[in-house]
Length: 454
Image (cartoon, rainbow, N blue to C red; front, side, top):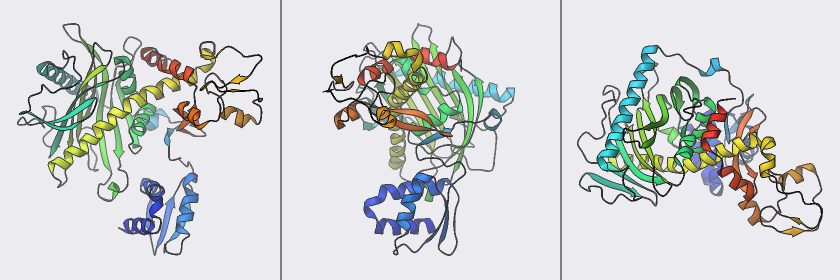
Protein backbone atom coordinates (compact mmCIF):
# COMPACT_ATOMS: atom_id res chain seq x y z
CA UNK A 1 0.00 0.00 0.00
CA UNK A 2 3.05 2.29 0.32
CA UNK A 3 3.29 2.36 -3.46
CA UNK A 4 -0.37 3.34 -3.81
CA UNK A 5 0.20 6.26 -1.44
CA UNK A 6 3.19 7.50 -3.44
CA UNK A 7 1.20 7.16 -6.67
CA UNK A 8 -1.69 9.25 -5.29
CA UNK A 9 0.66 11.95 -4.00
CA UNK A 10 2.33 12.26 -7.39
CA UNK A 11 -1.00 12.47 -9.21
CA UNK A 12 -2.26 15.20 -6.88
CA UNK A 13 0.88 17.25 -7.45
CA UNK A 14 1.37 16.51 -11.18
CA UNK A 15 -2.09 15.72 -12.57
CA UNK A 16 -1.05 16.76 -16.10
CA UNK A 17 1.80 14.21 -16.17
CA UNK A 18 -0.20 11.06 -15.49
CA UNK A 19 1.31 9.16 -18.45
CA UNK A 20 4.87 9.74 -17.20
CA UNK A 21 3.91 8.70 -13.67
CA UNK A 22 2.23 5.53 -14.96
CA UNK A 23 5.37 4.68 -16.94
CA UNK A 24 7.56 5.05 -13.85
CA UNK A 25 5.31 2.86 -11.74
CA UNK A 26 5.32 0.22 -14.48
CA UNK A 27 9.09 0.02 -14.11
CA UNK A 28 8.93 -0.06 -10.34
CA UNK A 29 6.74 -3.12 -10.40
CA UNK A 30 8.93 -4.79 -12.98
CA UNK A 31 11.87 -4.78 -10.58
CA UNK A 32 12.43 -4.80 -6.83
CA UNK A 33 10.85 -2.13 -4.67
CA UNK A 34 11.46 -1.63 -0.96
CA UNK A 35 10.16 1.03 1.44
CA UNK A 36 11.95 1.89 4.68
CA UNK A 37 11.38 5.18 6.52
CA UNK A 38 10.05 6.91 3.42
CA UNK A 39 13.04 5.84 1.34
CA UNK A 40 12.39 4.04 -1.93
CA UNK A 41 15.08 1.99 -3.68
CA UNK A 42 14.24 1.76 -7.36
CA UNK A 43 15.97 0.21 -10.35
CA UNK A 44 15.32 2.44 -13.36
CA UNK A 45 16.58 2.50 -16.95
CA UNK A 46 18.43 5.67 -18.01
CA UNK A 47 15.49 7.21 -20.00
CA UNK A 48 13.36 7.32 -16.83
CA UNK A 49 15.96 8.71 -14.41
CA UNK A 50 15.51 12.36 -15.38
CA UNK A 51 11.73 12.27 -15.06
CA UNK A 52 11.91 10.45 -11.74
CA UNK A 53 14.38 12.92 -10.20
CA UNK A 54 12.32 15.86 -11.42
CA UNK A 55 9.08 14.56 -9.91
CA UNK A 56 10.58 13.67 -6.53
CA UNK A 57 12.56 16.90 -6.14
CA UNK A 58 9.33 18.70 -5.21
CA UNK A 59 8.99 19.49 -1.46
CA UNK A 60 5.35 18.33 -1.49
CA UNK A 61 6.53 14.75 -2.17
CA UNK A 62 8.04 13.60 1.18
CA UNK A 63 10.06 10.67 -0.16
CA UNK A 64 13.79 10.18 -0.42
CA UNK A 65 14.88 8.23 -3.51
CA UNK A 66 17.76 5.82 -3.90
CA UNK A 67 18.06 5.42 -7.68
CA UNK A 68 19.99 2.60 -9.27
CA UNK A 69 20.63 1.88 -12.97
CA UNK A 70 20.57 -1.87 -13.73
CA UNK A 71 23.70 -3.35 -15.24
CA UNK A 72 21.66 -4.20 -18.33
CA UNK A 73 19.29 -1.22 -18.42
CA UNK A 74 16.29 -1.88 -20.61
CA UNK A 75 14.51 0.93 -22.43
CA UNK A 76 10.73 1.31 -22.21
CA UNK A 77 10.28 -0.16 -25.69
CA UNK A 78 12.73 -3.03 -25.29
CA UNK A 79 11.52 -6.35 -26.61
CA UNK A 80 14.10 -8.93 -25.62
CA UNK A 81 17.81 -9.44 -24.97
CA UNK A 82 19.94 -9.49 -28.07
CA UNK A 83 21.81 -12.57 -26.93
CA UNK A 84 20.42 -15.54 -25.07
CA UNK A 85 21.89 -19.00 -24.85
CA UNK A 86 19.88 -22.12 -25.50
CA UNK A 87 20.61 -23.47 -22.03
CA UNK A 88 18.93 -20.43 -20.48
CA UNK A 89 15.80 -20.73 -22.58
CA UNK A 90 15.10 -24.41 -23.19
CA UNK A 91 13.37 -26.81 -20.85
CA UNK A 92 12.95 -30.56 -21.09
CA UNK A 93 9.79 -32.59 -21.64
CA UNK A 94 9.47 -36.35 -21.65
CA UNK A 95 8.28 -38.15 -24.78
CA UNK A 96 5.04 -38.89 -22.93
CA UNK A 97 4.51 -35.18 -22.21
CA UNK A 98 5.19 -34.29 -25.84
CA UNK A 99 2.66 -36.85 -27.06
CA UNK A 100 0.16 -35.53 -24.52
CA UNK A 101 0.53 -32.02 -25.98
CA UNK A 102 0.05 -33.35 -29.52
CA UNK A 103 -3.16 -35.12 -28.50
CA UNK A 104 -4.61 -32.04 -26.82
CA UNK A 105 -3.97 -29.75 -29.79
CA UNK A 106 -5.39 -32.33 -32.21
CA UNK A 107 -8.56 -32.62 -30.12
CA UNK A 108 -9.01 -28.85 -29.99
CA UNK A 109 -8.35 -28.43 -33.71
CA UNK A 110 -10.85 -31.15 -34.64
CA UNK A 111 -13.47 -29.63 -32.36
CA UNK A 112 -12.95 -26.12 -33.78
CA UNK A 113 -13.23 -27.34 -37.38
CA UNK A 114 -16.41 -29.23 -36.48
CA UNK A 115 -17.93 -26.12 -34.87
CA UNK A 116 -17.08 -24.04 -37.97
CA UNK A 117 -18.85 -26.59 -40.16
CA UNK A 118 -21.81 -26.83 -37.77
CA UNK A 119 -22.32 -23.04 -37.85
CA UNK A 120 -21.73 -22.83 -41.60
CA UNK A 121 -18.99 -20.25 -41.16
CA UNK A 122 -16.42 -21.50 -43.66
CA UNK A 123 -19.00 -21.51 -46.47
CA UNK A 124 -20.51 -18.11 -45.62
CA UNK A 125 -19.37 -15.23 -47.81
CA UNK A 126 -20.73 -12.53 -45.53
CA UNK A 127 -18.50 -10.62 -43.13
CA UNK A 128 -21.46 -10.20 -40.77
CA UNK A 129 -23.02 -12.94 -38.69
CA UNK A 130 -26.58 -11.73 -38.17
CA UNK A 131 -27.91 -15.18 -39.05
CA UNK A 132 -26.68 -16.71 -35.78
CA UNK A 133 -29.41 -17.92 -33.46
CA UNK A 134 -29.94 -15.11 -30.92
CA UNK A 135 -31.40 -17.56 -28.41
CA UNK A 136 -28.06 -19.33 -28.27
CA UNK A 137 -25.67 -16.45 -28.98
CA UNK A 138 -25.69 -13.31 -26.84
CA UNK A 139 -24.02 -10.44 -28.70
CA UNK A 140 -21.45 -8.71 -26.48
CA UNK A 141 -19.77 -6.30 -28.88
CA UNK A 142 -19.93 -5.49 -32.57
CA UNK A 143 -17.11 -3.92 -34.59
CA UNK A 144 -16.69 -3.35 -38.35
CA UNK A 145 -14.71 -6.58 -38.87
CA UNK A 146 -15.54 -8.71 -35.83
CA UNK A 147 -18.49 -9.55 -33.60
CA UNK A 148 -18.11 -11.02 -30.12
CA UNK A 149 -20.63 -13.35 -28.49
CA UNK A 150 -21.28 -15.35 -25.36
CA UNK A 151 -22.61 -18.86 -25.92
CA UNK A 152 -25.72 -19.50 -23.80
CA UNK A 153 -25.55 -23.28 -24.31
CA UNK A 154 -25.21 -25.27 -21.04
CA UNK A 155 -21.59 -26.20 -20.37
CA UNK A 156 -20.27 -24.11 -23.28
CA UNK A 157 -17.53 -22.69 -21.04
CA UNK A 158 -16.07 -26.17 -20.52
CA UNK A 159 -14.16 -28.25 -23.06
CA UNK A 160 -13.13 -31.91 -22.74
CA UNK A 161 -9.43 -30.96 -22.69
CA UNK A 162 -9.88 -28.79 -19.58
CA UNK A 163 -8.79 -30.42 -16.33
CA UNK A 164 -11.62 -29.62 -13.90
CA UNK A 165 -9.24 -29.89 -10.98
CA UNK A 166 -7.29 -26.88 -12.30
CA UNK A 167 -10.25 -24.75 -13.42
CA UNK A 168 -12.80 -23.03 -11.16
CA UNK A 169 -14.64 -20.19 -12.91
CA UNK A 170 -14.12 -20.36 -16.69
CA UNK A 171 -15.46 -17.43 -18.71
CA UNK A 172 -15.73 -17.75 -22.50
CA UNK A 173 -16.04 -15.30 -25.40
CA UNK A 174 -16.54 -16.45 -29.00
CA UNK A 175 -15.75 -14.18 -31.94
CA UNK A 176 -16.51 -14.29 -35.65
CA UNK A 177 -15.02 -11.93 -38.20
CA UNK A 178 -12.67 -11.27 -41.08
CA UNK A 179 -9.16 -9.88 -41.43
CA UNK A 180 -7.96 -7.93 -44.47
CA UNK A 181 -4.90 -9.96 -45.39
CA UNK A 182 -3.97 -13.28 -46.98
CA UNK A 183 -3.92 -16.54 -45.05
CA UNK A 184 -0.14 -16.79 -45.46
CA UNK A 185 0.32 -13.27 -44.07
CA UNK A 186 -1.83 -14.11 -41.07
CA UNK A 187 0.09 -17.31 -40.34
CA UNK A 188 3.39 -15.42 -40.60
CA UNK A 189 2.08 -12.93 -38.04
CA UNK A 190 1.17 -15.75 -35.64
CA UNK A 191 3.99 -18.28 -35.90
CA UNK A 192 6.36 -17.91 -32.94
CA UNK A 193 8.97 -20.68 -33.08
CA UNK A 194 11.60 -18.99 -30.90
CA UNK A 195 12.15 -16.66 -27.96
CA UNK A 196 12.43 -13.51 -30.06
CA UNK A 197 9.10 -13.93 -31.83
CA UNK A 198 7.28 -14.83 -28.60
CA UNK A 199 8.52 -11.66 -26.90
CA UNK A 200 7.85 -9.61 -30.02
CA UNK A 201 4.24 -10.76 -30.02
CA UNK A 202 3.80 -9.85 -26.37
CA UNK A 203 5.02 -6.30 -26.89
CA UNK A 204 3.02 -5.74 -30.10
CA UNK A 205 -0.10 -6.82 -28.21
CA UNK A 206 0.64 -4.37 -25.40
CA UNK A 207 1.44 -6.97 -22.76
CA UNK A 208 4.16 -6.76 -20.16
CA UNK A 209 7.32 -8.65 -21.19
CA UNK A 210 7.20 -12.26 -20.04
CA UNK A 211 9.56 -12.99 -17.15
CA UNK A 212 11.69 -16.17 -16.91
CA UNK A 213 10.53 -17.31 -20.34
CA UNK A 214 11.50 -20.86 -21.32
CA UNK A 215 10.60 -22.75 -24.48
CA UNK A 216 10.52 -26.42 -25.49
CA UNK A 217 9.94 -26.92 -29.25
CA UNK A 218 8.21 -30.19 -30.17
CA UNK A 219 7.51 -29.61 -33.88
CA UNK A 220 9.47 -26.90 -35.70
CA UNK A 221 8.86 -25.22 -39.09
CA UNK A 222 10.26 -26.83 -42.23
CA UNK A 223 10.65 -25.77 -45.85
CA UNK A 224 7.52 -27.76 -46.72
CA UNK A 225 5.53 -26.41 -43.73
CA UNK A 226 7.05 -23.02 -42.83
CA UNK A 227 4.17 -22.01 -40.54
CA UNK A 228 3.92 -25.22 -38.51
CA UNK A 229 5.04 -25.07 -34.90
CA UNK A 230 4.22 -26.92 -31.69
CA UNK A 231 5.93 -26.20 -28.41
CA UNK A 232 5.51 -25.55 -24.71
CA UNK A 233 6.31 -22.16 -23.17
CA UNK A 234 6.73 -21.45 -19.47
CA UNK A 235 6.86 -17.90 -18.09
CA UNK A 236 5.62 -15.57 -15.36
CA UNK A 237 2.88 -13.14 -16.37
CA UNK A 238 2.59 -9.74 -14.68
CA UNK A 239 -0.01 -7.01 -15.12
CA UNK A 240 0.27 -3.32 -15.92
CA UNK A 241 -0.14 -0.71 -13.21
CA UNK A 242 -2.50 -0.34 -11.34
CA UNK A 243 -3.63 -3.98 -11.69
CA UNK A 244 -0.38 -5.03 -10.04
CA UNK A 245 -1.90 -3.87 -6.74
CA UNK A 246 -4.65 -6.50 -7.02
CA UNK A 247 -3.28 -9.32 -9.19
CA UNK A 248 -0.12 -11.15 -8.17
CA UNK A 249 2.31 -12.48 -10.79
CA UNK A 250 1.00 -15.75 -12.26
CA UNK A 251 2.89 -18.61 -13.84
CA UNK A 252 1.74 -19.86 -17.22
CA UNK A 253 2.65 -23.13 -18.92
CA UNK A 254 1.14 -23.10 -22.40
CA UNK A 255 1.07 -25.31 -25.45
CA UNK A 256 1.58 -23.09 -28.51
CA UNK A 257 0.52 -24.50 -31.88
CA UNK A 258 0.19 -22.92 -35.32
CA UNK A 259 -0.07 -24.39 -38.79
CA UNK A 260 -2.42 -25.28 -41.62
CA UNK A 261 -4.54 -28.28 -42.56
CA UNK A 262 -6.45 -29.35 -45.66
CA UNK A 263 -9.79 -31.02 -44.99
CA UNK A 264 -11.23 -34.00 -46.87
CA UNK A 265 -13.14 -31.69 -49.22
CA UNK A 266 -9.92 -29.84 -50.15
CA UNK A 267 -10.55 -26.72 -48.05
CA UNK A 268 -7.42 -25.09 -46.59
CA UNK A 269 -7.55 -23.85 -42.99
CA UNK A 270 -5.01 -22.13 -40.81
CA UNK A 271 -5.11 -22.50 -37.04
CA UNK A 272 -3.66 -21.28 -33.78
CA UNK A 273 -4.11 -23.06 -30.45
CA UNK A 274 -2.96 -21.86 -27.03
CA UNK A 275 -3.73 -24.12 -24.08
CA UNK A 276 -2.70 -24.33 -20.43
CA UNK A 277 -1.29 -27.74 -19.52
CA UNK A 278 -0.59 -29.30 -16.07
CA UNK A 279 3.12 -29.83 -16.71
CA UNK A 280 6.21 -28.61 -14.84
CA UNK A 281 4.37 -28.10 -11.55
CA UNK A 282 5.58 -25.38 -9.18
CA UNK A 283 4.35 -23.56 -6.07
CA UNK A 284 3.36 -20.40 -7.96
CA UNK A 285 -0.32 -19.76 -8.75
CA UNK A 286 -1.14 -20.48 -12.39
CA UNK A 287 -3.51 -18.85 -14.86
CA UNK A 288 -5.61 -21.26 -16.93
CA UNK A 289 -6.43 -20.28 -20.51
CA UNK A 290 -7.65 -21.88 -23.75
CA UNK A 291 -7.57 -20.07 -27.11
CA UNK A 292 -8.56 -21.70 -30.37
CA UNK A 293 -8.60 -19.87 -33.69
CA UNK A 294 -9.42 -21.21 -37.14
CA UNK A 295 -8.89 -19.21 -40.35
CA UNK A 296 -9.95 -19.68 -43.97
CA UNK A 297 -9.64 -17.64 -47.17
CA UNK A 298 -12.78 -16.01 -48.56
CA UNK A 299 -13.65 -15.13 -52.15
CA UNK A 300 -12.92 -11.42 -51.67
CA UNK A 301 -9.32 -12.15 -50.60
CA UNK A 302 -9.88 -11.59 -46.89
CA UNK A 303 -9.55 -14.24 -44.20
CA UNK A 304 -12.50 -15.42 -42.12
CA UNK A 305 -11.92 -16.31 -38.49
CA UNK A 306 -13.66 -18.28 -35.77
CA UNK A 307 -12.16 -17.88 -32.31
CA UNK A 308 -12.97 -19.04 -28.79
CA UNK A 309 -11.22 -17.67 -25.70
CA UNK A 310 -11.71 -19.23 -22.26
CA UNK A 311 -9.98 -17.86 -19.15
CA UNK A 312 -10.29 -18.92 -15.52
CA UNK A 313 -11.03 -15.59 -13.78
CA UNK A 314 -11.14 -16.26 -10.03
CA UNK A 315 -12.37 -12.89 -8.80
CA UNK A 316 -15.68 -11.75 -7.34
CA UNK A 317 -16.71 -9.67 -10.31
CA UNK A 318 -19.98 -9.73 -12.28
CA UNK A 319 -19.90 -12.03 -15.29
CA UNK A 320 -20.46 -9.06 -17.62
CA UNK A 321 -17.29 -7.40 -16.29
CA UNK A 322 -15.29 -10.58 -16.83
CA UNK A 323 -16.64 -10.89 -20.37
CA UNK A 324 -15.68 -7.26 -21.07
CA UNK A 325 -12.12 -8.03 -19.93
CA UNK A 326 -11.93 -10.92 -22.41
CA UNK A 327 -13.40 -8.76 -25.19
CA UNK A 328 -10.55 -6.28 -24.75
CA UNK A 329 -8.08 -9.12 -25.18
CA UNK A 330 -9.79 -10.23 -28.39
CA UNK A 331 -9.64 -6.70 -29.82
CA UNK A 332 -5.95 -6.43 -28.97
CA UNK A 333 -5.41 -9.54 -31.09
CA UNK A 334 -7.30 -7.92 -33.98
CA UNK A 335 -4.97 -4.90 -33.88
CA UNK A 336 -1.91 -7.11 -33.46
CA UNK A 337 -2.24 -8.97 -36.79
CA UNK A 338 -1.50 -6.07 -39.22
CA UNK A 339 1.22 -4.72 -36.91
CA UNK A 340 2.93 -8.11 -36.76
CA UNK A 341 2.75 -8.65 -40.53
CA UNK A 342 4.26 -5.23 -41.24
CA UNK A 343 6.93 -5.58 -38.53
CA UNK A 344 8.12 -9.00 -39.73
CA UNK A 345 8.09 -7.96 -43.40
CA UNK A 346 10.03 -4.78 -42.66
CA UNK A 347 12.58 -6.59 -40.50
CA UNK A 348 13.17 -9.10 -43.29
CA UNK A 349 13.69 -6.32 -45.86
CA UNK A 350 16.05 -4.38 -43.58
CA UNK A 351 18.21 -7.47 -43.07
CA UNK A 352 18.47 -8.00 -46.84
CA UNK A 353 18.52 -4.45 -48.16
CA UNK A 354 21.95 -4.92 -49.77
CA UNK A 355 20.64 -7.87 -51.78
CA UNK A 356 17.38 -6.06 -52.57
CA UNK A 357 18.94 -2.72 -53.54
CA UNK A 358 18.38 -3.24 -57.28
CA UNK A 359 14.67 -3.81 -56.72
CA UNK A 360 14.05 -0.89 -54.39
CA UNK A 361 16.51 1.90 -55.32
CA UNK A 362 15.06 4.49 -57.76
CA UNK A 363 17.06 5.64 -60.83
CA UNK A 364 20.01 7.84 -59.87
CA UNK A 365 19.37 11.56 -60.49
CA UNK A 366 22.44 13.34 -61.89
CA UNK A 367 21.20 16.93 -62.41
CA UNK A 368 18.20 19.11 -61.71
CA UNK A 369 16.20 19.71 -58.53
CA UNK A 370 16.18 17.05 -55.83
CA UNK A 371 12.72 15.50 -55.36
CA UNK A 372 11.38 14.17 -52.07
CA UNK A 373 10.66 10.46 -52.24
CA UNK A 374 7.51 10.95 -50.18
CA UNK A 375 5.63 13.96 -51.56
CA UNK A 376 7.70 14.86 -54.70
CA UNK A 377 8.58 18.27 -53.24
CA UNK A 378 11.48 19.75 -55.24
CA UNK A 379 14.44 21.76 -54.00
CA UNK A 380 17.64 23.10 -55.53
CA UNK A 381 19.40 23.23 -52.16
CA UNK A 382 22.22 20.70 -51.73
CA UNK A 383 21.30 17.96 -49.26
CA UNK A 384 24.58 17.96 -47.36
CA UNK A 385 25.27 18.60 -43.70
CA UNK A 386 26.17 16.19 -40.96
CA UNK A 387 25.95 12.45 -41.62
CA UNK A 388 23.42 12.12 -38.79
CA UNK A 389 21.07 14.64 -40.43
CA UNK A 390 21.46 13.05 -43.85
CA UNK A 391 20.50 9.66 -42.43
CA UNK A 392 17.45 11.12 -40.68
CA UNK A 393 16.20 12.58 -43.98
CA UNK A 394 16.58 9.44 -46.07
CA UNK A 395 14.60 6.26 -46.58
CA UNK A 396 16.15 3.40 -44.61
CA UNK A 397 15.82 1.01 -47.55
CA UNK A 398 16.52 2.89 -50.80
CA UNK A 399 18.18 5.99 -49.24
CA UNK A 400 16.06 8.40 -51.30
CA UNK A 401 15.87 11.94 -49.87
CA UNK A 402 12.78 12.82 -47.80
CA UNK A 403 11.78 16.40 -47.01
CA UNK A 404 11.16 17.65 -43.47
CA UNK A 405 7.47 18.58 -43.84
CA UNK A 406 5.39 17.12 -41.02
CA UNK A 407 2.83 15.63 -43.42
CA UNK A 408 5.58 13.83 -45.30
CA UNK A 409 7.31 12.58 -42.13
CA UNK A 410 4.09 11.08 -40.78
CA UNK A 411 3.31 9.39 -44.11
CA UNK A 412 6.83 7.97 -44.40
CA UNK A 413 7.16 6.22 -41.04
CA UNK A 414 7.04 2.56 -40.17
CA UNK A 415 7.72 0.83 -36.86
CA UNK A 416 10.73 -1.45 -37.04
CA UNK A 417 12.40 -3.87 -34.65
CA UNK A 418 16.03 -2.82 -34.46
CA UNK A 419 19.08 -3.74 -32.40
CA UNK A 420 20.07 -1.00 -29.97
CA UNK A 421 23.30 -1.80 -28.11
CA UNK A 422 22.47 -5.00 -26.19
CA UNK A 423 18.73 -4.89 -26.83
CA UNK A 424 16.19 -5.25 -29.61
CA UNK A 425 13.79 -2.30 -29.56
CA UNK A 426 10.88 -0.77 -31.43
CA UNK A 427 11.75 2.35 -33.38
CA UNK A 428 9.98 4.54 -35.94
CA UNK A 429 12.08 4.75 -39.10
CA UNK A 430 11.69 6.62 -42.38
CA UNK A 431 10.46 4.53 -45.31
CA UNK A 432 9.32 6.12 -48.57
CA UNK A 433 5.94 5.12 -50.09
CA UNK A 434 7.66 3.14 -52.86
CA UNK A 435 9.56 1.00 -50.37
CA UNK A 436 6.53 0.71 -48.10
CA UNK A 437 4.61 -0.89 -50.98
CA UNK A 438 7.60 -3.14 -51.66
CA UNK A 439 7.71 -4.26 -48.02
CA UNK A 440 4.02 -5.11 -47.99
CA UNK A 441 4.25 -7.06 -51.25
CA UNK A 442 6.74 -9.64 -49.96
CA UNK A 443 5.73 -13.30 -49.82
CA UNK A 444 4.97 -14.44 -46.28
CA UNK A 445 5.95 -18.03 -47.11
CA UNK A 446 9.33 -16.93 -48.50
CA UNK A 447 10.00 -14.86 -45.39
CA UNK A 448 9.12 -17.78 -43.10
CA UNK A 449 11.32 -20.18 -45.11
CA UNK A 450 14.27 -17.79 -45.16
CA UNK A 451 14.17 -17.60 -41.35
CA UNK A 452 14.87 -21.36 -41.28
CA UNK A 453 18.26 -20.80 -42.93
CA UNK A 454 19.55 -18.45 -40.22
